[in-house]
Length: 406
Image (cartoon, rainbow, N blue to C red):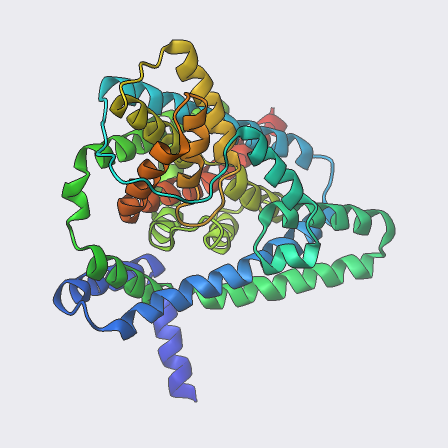
């Protein structure tokens, strides 16, 4: 038993990022050399499934505990981080409009694709409000984070008003237990990444980079510009310090994992662990991180805008300044309603297309193309969305400390 403990200790002493990079390289090589070995893929499936299973429970207990123990100073930080989440998402949509006008893309639209998707912004808001008041147990079981946040805040406030200190401490202890379980799961990330990379490479190879190269370059270029230029600028205007060391830490320790899981929801435990490592107040990040996974959707706003304008260019529809500005607002609001799972933003493209008078049958063809390139587009989108949650949470924390120091 002591030998096993020693091996585990040596394994955990190695940098997690290094272990993940090793898993990434091995997975890619196996995918290219032995694409028919189906047993390897199960490693990725199990890892992502385990994170998705534990994340709703983690969010529920952490948010309840944080709200129950919260003090008045948290209010300003929440206002700061929410406003930056929304501002960043809107700027991402505007950048996508500019990029689409500068480098217009057309698509090869042929066969009609039929799939259920939101038809209007009213449907998006209806779904949001309906999900908010879903049975709390069902919300946890179905990973409905809008419902989880709503009920966890309600229960947290109730605990704060009515429960004894011992009860609140018990909830906090349970949150610590769940957090520890998450830490153990994260140690298996290298094996999960190996399986995920193997699956992507064995199924898609490298062809996805050439078939829709122009569209991919536009999508990824807009997302990277938003992440590397506009978001750091927003942070700098807040904290008046070089934001890039923080940004690169978030990309390395959060974005890398999110790139392969392709799920903001599954990356919530990773982000919370990073926030703790950065020394951020647990009462703050335990709410701001799951909230960011819901409304901090820069990549989703880019995807919705670029794909919609690509369809418009394809059918010969001229989009003026005011319609483009309105599209940016629609994409921002729609992105906040995008689900935190792979491909969640693509199903909102028909909604945005409808505001330009483009029919659902045409728009859904663009969605089909989006799923083809999703191995790259959705991976980059999720990596930038999820790492941005930590980036703005930390920026809001530093901004609050800076104000208190004055």
